[in-house]
Length: 352
Ligand code: NAD
Image (cartoon, rainbow, N blue to C red; front, side):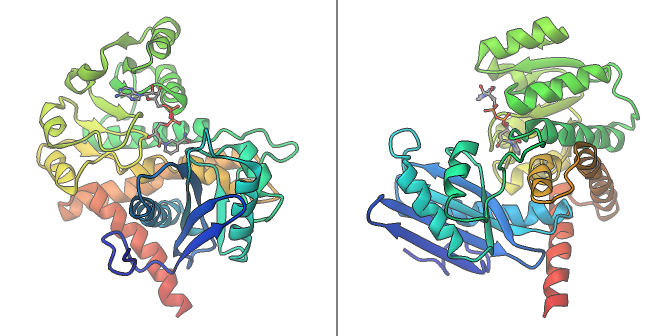
């Protein structure tokens, strides 16, 4: 298996492979960049088909965390960890403790947190072996669920995109089509409705859409139809990679702003949206509310109001990105990458 020649390798500072005979741990930690601070990123536990797949995921995700934290102005770098295991069948205390020792061996250069396949309870087990764990509930600090913060950030991002893409300063009667009303999507739907928006929702979970139809008067469409809805905004809040070449042509909206990670299936899809005059809100700028909250949990002066104020800063970041995108005639996601790079590469330069 190649590391330095791997297509997802992007000058990562450190890639650590961990093995523990007793528990069967097979893990990889990737530290992409630490110039802004220690590399923070979740621990994904997943039965990868191969070590190669696990390496691909950890390299890609850790790099994404550097960009997300830099754009959110956090004093953090980007990292990620994966354990090759089925979280339902193979997750044991011994496995998590071995992971804790591996994290600890990096002396705080990498800070772990929840991700898919790992829970807050798992973080408590890991914390028996290392202090470099985030996302633990502290006494007096409600939370454990970053979704309301993520949703509020997406709401602010959407409001900003509507201002730039539609020239509207309010959301009254704006029609928003939301794909996926799970944790983040449902909170977002409630904030949008409170601001006067009209909602169209879809989810493979019919109970979730039925609840929002009843509670918010949302119109429900079948999952396959959400891309064709006549609306002002499309908010992808389910899966990654949903905006492919076909979806680019089907969308009738003028703005895309949602919570899902890696919404664009390819860079070409982003450029096609740009050509069609559809304003795309870079996903990792919009959905940074969760990591902002996790970062605040590491501080001793956590206050929900301060976290929310920081999350609302997403709107200022996007204002800058959309303005530059217009000036430079470039798609916003390309500008977002550049702004993030300026922030962590400027730090690289200073540190040198
Ligand atoms: P979730 O699992 O609670 O919700 C996702 C919802 O999408 C579920 O209700 C699911 O039934 C639905 N869904 C799945 N496939 C669908 C399809 N084809 N069509 C319509 N609906 C479908 O997840 P979440 O925590 O709400 O996160 C949503 C997205 O936002 C994910 O992509 C996640 O990676 C991203 N994200 C979440 C956070 C957070 O704080 N939770 C932070 C950053 C990014």
